Image (cartoon, rainbow, N blue to C red; front, top):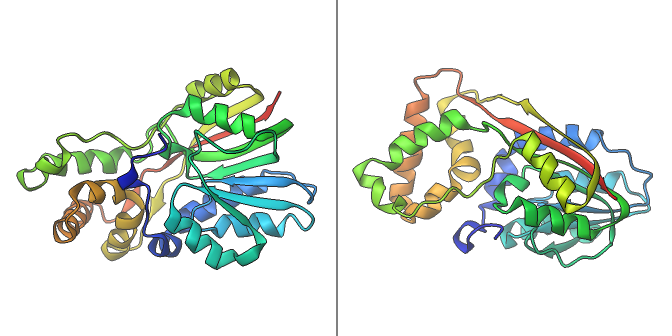
Length: 260
């Protein structure tokens, strides 16, 4: 599954406001993509639509379809983009498309899909023959440091009961495994690579504001109590205060290929 029902929804307005690093990484990925201007493009995991708007600008005679599992994200994106984009709520492992797209674009989404083989099979099925994919997501040691800090907090008595059946909601794959999975799914001319993308926040308050809607969402969903969830955010932020740079150790997995 793409993610559990409890983890499907986001605070879309907060994410839209603070997701500047994801947006900036995505613009660089979009700059790698050559478009004629008349293609049909899927934005797979479109989120709140900030990058979807950039795709629209490059397709004066084309069409963009934004796909996301989160109703909140799609509502935010529709408010942002209006009639210029068609939006579809769907699981990336079970897309309702067959040979329909010239291009699939995606950033900051694939790592939320636990079954990457099923996802790549679904994506390649949605492409027209010869269609291409250009994407980026978290991979490798993405956020390893901050997740180590979070795991230490999860073991504390006041939080431990909420994480008895905890399962990581993401797949941070390496480049080699991803290339193999894409090839098996039917992609050709596959290229994958990892790159570090450390991101520094300016203060403890900025760090705290970023953590909740972007990094800690699945942990807060597991806790389920708003007051205790706020304490969890405060505890993570307090840990980071020992590091005055407030740096997050992001790693990005880049991938491209075409439907053979």
